[in-house]
Each structure stands twice: as structure tokens, then as C-alpha cells.
Image (tube, rainbow, N blue to C red):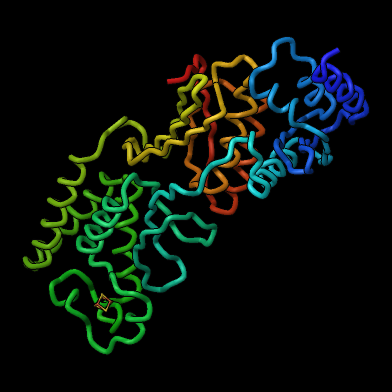
Length: 363
Ligand code: SF4
């Protein structure tokens, strides 16, 4: 009997004592370092499957060669196991788990909620702090341009909170017509909130709604012979038209926010792409490369690796109305992921629907 076969037999015996309940298993190497974390509905069945494989993938053989010990943590439900798996991966960063790198921090636009007169920021992380976040976008430059455009169009302040607090007179931004000067109360909180609401409509991709509001307002100003105010709105309308022409429209029917996920890979690794479609417009995409994952390997089950990816990805990113998956993960896993995402959504008061196309394929 080879050394590996002996090891397999030894582990089969150990695993036969594992409980058939839900939990998380931790594979450790000789120096007690966690090299793989997995979740299971039945710990016994899941871990046993590693040692019963007829043809083992390079990843499984690597794991078998390096495992010295397997521990487990029992959970009350599979949902708990799923959540625990994500936090353990984040904490221990095991070599053979899907680990999303932090090095590519994509830019988001944040509209602060803690200030009576909010402003727009570029941020690189989404936090559950009650702020409105939009993105992720592909380039920081694009985000800065968008913020500048929104500030100018809707006359939103661009000063820091410290400057805002210390002003006794409006700054140049007000003098050139790009800010309504809330710092010295030249605008009421209600009117300023309406300015922000218009910027939010545009960020949410609801430009049709915004155009309607602005046209109505322009008409009202013209009828009241307030031509300067009407002219400003006309400029905004033109700027909005120009920005609309630059956006890639995926669907004019959908008002939903969707993330569309696809993957492609072979023995050189796998790239998972998340495309962000907001109200029918593609606003950006994120690509993640997992060097050890071969999605074409029959041992690699998307119910494990794609579910684990979603679990981690949506811990850090905005959860849209719908997530369109490239493969059908089955009703059980879909429900589980929906429940996990809903846990996060609750904090953000967003609605979630998880959609898997019936004939899903990688693309
Ligand atoms: S006018 Fe006041 S609120 Fe507006 S940008 Fe200048 S300092 Fe800020």
C-alpha cells in the first residue's frame, strides 16, 4: 500500500466518526495551519467524499498530501455554516479556498447620510453605515468626472465638512453657480435634499424620471419668466443627454439593478467576471482570477466554489435586486445563498431576487 493510500484509509476511519450534522470543516497541515475550509450540510458525507473519489483532481491530491488533521465546528443550520465558512476564510485565508483579493479596490460613489447637507465622495470600500453607495465603477477618473458632473449639474457642495463648518461666506463654487451655498444657509435643507435626490436618481440610472422632473421645472421657470433659472436647467438637460449617450444600454425594459456573473477557465485558472447592470445600463465590471481553480475539472463543483465566491463577494459589495448566475446551482443552494444575502440586505433595506438561467453555461 502506498503512503497516500495508507493516509486515505486512516482519514476514512477518522471521518466515519464525524457527525452527520451541518458545520464547517477545517483541513490543517503538519504545522496546524488551516489550508482549506469548507461548509457542509452533513459533515460526515461531505468530508468522506474527499477520500472516496475514483479520480482525484490535482487540488484534491495536493490537499490529501498536505492534510495532517481535520477539525470541524458544528452549526445549528446550514445557513450558519455558510456564514461561518466565509468569516473563517476571511480570517485564515487558506491557500485552497476562493479568496478574493483586496488589492483591487474598485471605486464607488458614496452619498453620505450623516450630514444634513450631504456631499458625494469617491470611496474604495462599501460599509454598512447607512450611506448610499453606487458602483463599483471601473475607473477612479470616471468616478471623479461623474461626481464633478453631478455637483455642477445639481449644485451640490464639494467642500469638506471642516470647510463647510467654518465658512462665513460662500466660496467661489457658489459664485460660478455650481453650489447653492448651504454653508451659509442660502438654501434650505429641503431644497438641498431635492438637489441630492436628483443626483441619486441619475446614479440609480433613473434618468427618464429625472428628465421629466427637470423639464417640468424648466417649463415652470419659463412661465414665471425666470429665464436664468430655466437656462440652468436647460444646460443640465443637455449635459444629461450627453452622459446618457455614453452609457452602454443592455435593456431599456428593466428598471432592476442586476449583477450578471460569468466565468471562463481551464487548468491555468479561472476568471470570474461580475458585470454591474443598473436600470438596464452597464456601469462597470469586476474580474477576479482564481489561479488554482479549473472549472472544467469534474471534481470542482460550482455548488462549492461559485457559492463560496458569492458568499464572500457580497460581504463586501452592494447587493443588487437580482444576481444572474452562469450555472444553475440547484434550488437548495439558491435558497441558501438568497438567505445569506438577505442577512446582509436587511441591514441595507434592499430587495433581493436570485435568478439562475435554466440553461446556464459559462461565458
Ligand atoms: S459655497 Fe459653501 S457649501 Fe458650497 S462649496 Fe463653497 S463652502 Fe461649500
